[in-house]
Amino acid sequence: MTNLKEVARKAGVSPSTVSRVINNHPYVNEEKRNRVLQIIDEMNYIPNINAIHLKRGKTNLIGVVIPFSNHPYFSQLIQGISEEAIKLDKKIVLFQTSYDTDQEIDALEMLKLKQLDALIICSRNISLTIIEQYIEYGPISIFENITHSKLRTSYIDHYQSFLTALNHLYEHGHRNISCAINRKKSTSSIERIAAYKDFCIEKSLTYNDNNIYENYVLLEDGYDLSKEIQKSLNPPSAIVVSGDNTAAGLLLSLNDDLKENLSIIGFENHKISKLLNLTTIEIPLINIGKSLFNQLYDKSVSNQLFETRLIARQSVKNINV
Image 1 (cartoon, rainbow, N blue to C red):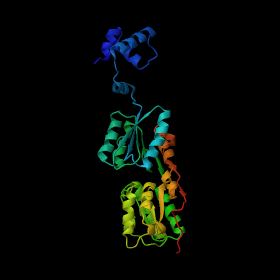
Image 2: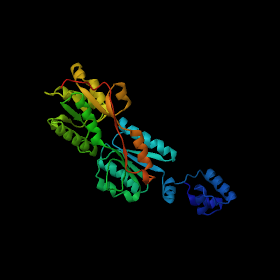
Image 3: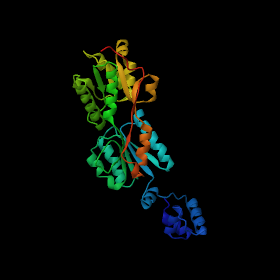
Image 4: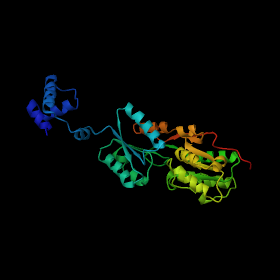
């Protein structure tokens, strides 16, 4: 395989001149530049892009850590990130981890080895302590509310958002309310469970761990959730589901009796919620994705709180108290 030194020898110039031509350095004699380009073409020389990146100190590659790509929640974040990346001629490298910590560390190690310029973490399983050890190697932004950290953050108030949903159900007469989440130990779920517990205390409702359904995140999970609810001895009259996809799957899987008597609130305000008239909590995911990207390059837009809002539709019904 042809190397840079061979190109320089045949062109009658120094290797540094060839390097300057490849990197579009302005201070190269035009005759020499044309000669080098001609030899490069004749010898079919392909520059080592990794070596060029190392010399420049940047790759124009931005890593994005997501647990899975087959979910509208993360696809909207990616859309926002990608829209901003295009403006700066940056490329996105996706790390689909399925919450495997080793794969999350792989992304961090690529940042350390200068194979990435920066990293965006949309959701994680790895500890913050480990992530913070890599801040010195490049900017890292994360979709999470973190205080007292050098990480750049964009986030929503999961506690207040969940409380808004629960209060909406209460105002419509519901007292037997359940909730469905993904991972109980995730930071967002911890805040949502805290909101649910505080809501029960404030409204003098009985709190029961069995009213919290765990590990529901995909559309098809809604079917399993419907089975769990239907076999319950005391099925809820309402449920808050932490994702529109699962809420939609639940609604579509209910038997006729429960469909008439179960009120449902989802999260995110995806297109499917509008199609099915699902009440939902809107999360501006595309704008959050844009923020996660932009704060890599502008510290003044770090630590951004994004507002959520209730979108009331027909999936919440009034009942007599």
